Length: 393
Image (cartoon, rainbow, N blue to C red; front, side):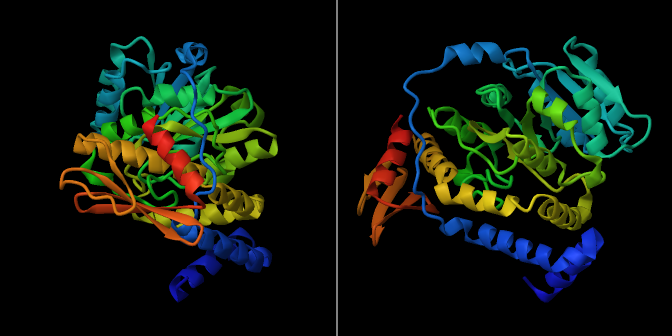
C-alpha cells in the first residue's frame, strides 16, 4: 500500500468509524494480501464431472427468474444489451427495466420502444434519480420470482442467463449465483481477483461456450455474489429485504446482501457454466474507486468473517480449476485442434499446447496458444489429471 493509498484509507476508515480504524486497516491489509497472492495459489481440489445432464432441473427454470436491468444513461451499451436480451430465445423469465431518471434524453424513448412490443417486458420510470440501490429494489418489488440483476455495461451471450437461473435453482438454500467474467471479484477468468483481457482474442460468446460445455457436479461456494450479473433467490430477498440503503447510492450492496444471506445459513455459489463480460466502473465515472474502497470498509466493519471466507475460497482452488478446464476448451476452439499436452509438449504454430513441469510435489501447467501463455499450479499430479479430465469431458 502506497503512502497515498494509506492516507486515503485512513480518511475513509475515519468516516466509517474512527475508533475502529486500526482494526479495519488490519482486515483491509489481510484482504489486499489475499488478492495479490491469488495468482500464486495452488489448485488442490477439482470439481467432479457430472455423469449426465439433469433435465429435471432445467425444466423448472423457465419462466421463474426475472431479469432486472437498472438504467442510468449509458445509451449505447444499454441499447446493445437490450437488443441481445431481445434476441435471446432462452431467457428464464420477464425483463424488468428501470430508468433511473437518465439525463440523456435519448434513453427514455429507446427504453419505451424496446419494451413496447414485448408483453413480457416491463418498463418502470423513476420520476427522479434514486440511485442504483433503490432502483434495483424497485425492480425486485416488481417481481414475485427469483431475479437476476444485470448491469447495462455487460455483454451477455445467449443462454447464459438461463444457466445462471438454473444454478440459482439447484438447491433451496442458494441465495445468489454469479457467473465467471473478465472483471468480477472472485470469479475473474482466468485470474479470479484481477481484471482480465479476453484470452486468445476470443469473443464473449466463445468464452461462454467454453464454460457451458463443462459438466460439473460439484457446487462451488463463493464468499459473496457480484452485482454486475447476480442471480438472487426470492426467498433470500424476502428474508433480507433487497439491497441495503446503508451503502448509499451504490457499491457494496451486493456484498452486504450475500454476506447477510450467509449469516442466515444460505449459500452464495458460482454459476460455473456461464460467462458474462463486464466493462466495469461505469456507474459513477471517475469516482468509482473511492466508492469501492468505502464500501469495502463497510463490509469489513459489518462482516469481519468475510476475510476468512475469501481465504477459504482461494485455498480450495475449485474455481481456478474450472478456469483451467475452460481455458483448454477455449484454446481448442480457437485453434481448431485438440490441445497438445505433456512434459516438453510441442505443437504446430496454430495448435494450443499445455507444457507440464514440476516444482516439488506441485505440477505446473502452462497453457500457450500463439503469443499468449497462462500458468496454473496444481498441488499434485492427481489434481492436474482430474482437471484435464474436466477439459476432456
